[in-house]
Length: 377
Image (tube, rainbow, N blue to C red; front, top):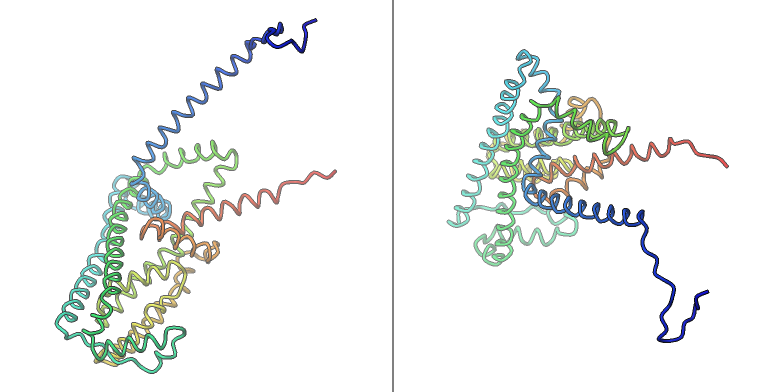
């Protein structure tokens, strides 16, 4: 029997066991899997880095395609089932619906901004005197009244005192306008992608179903159906309603000759997407119109129009959707703000959709867990 405690310097007679054939095969397979996973990770990261700039546009195009596909099917039926012709008509019509208002509002924004800058530089820009109600504003009332009154009495001096803040505000406005222009460009590309996706929708749907079943098992197709329903619900009940409210607001702003109507309309859209009433933007503008417009009829019209625009979601949502959006308002709010902070103006539209899908899939998963039978001991 070999000595388990050999003396120092004495070799242990017990031989090291050689790895078995099974262990060698296991090590070889582990190394092979590790190399494959490493290569896949490198390819995935490289592909994501290359494809990353196009990912928001592709997501936005996919969202548009899913939301408007029922409308595309009606268009396809009306042209005799010619999908390519229907896709071309869809792209042309939707691009016209986006470009025409953008051109109009963009021109209004540019003209209004140039006019304000010119009048401020010439010293001919008149700021109306603040009312006593401004003092009653919570938290900022007194400071707002003093600043407003200073601008009314000596606009040039006030601008000179606030030069650093005005510079920062100007840069912020330029950044916002640049982001809005980028979002419009992404939307134009997304509409083209949406048209192409709808032309090949049968094959795309089959591939999505196969991928969903591969990832989610038997529940995969159900999750796809939930995601599709959520996209259509959010796009119609939130984004489309906000766009309509913004367009209606732009009409009223143009009739009342409000400077930079395009900027205010864009703010109305942003406020409506995060589920806040547009009267927060249109209310102060209505007060400005009353103080500066020569026509009382136009001032009253704009006030009534602003109230109608703000309350429009109450009848637009049932008209477009048939019911309210099932996703909680807080989810939409967080999705809009988080999307805008992470992806700019485009994220304002994509964020609510993605977070709403995540919420609905989470609820579906929790429902499946609750419905599972429990084993009693």
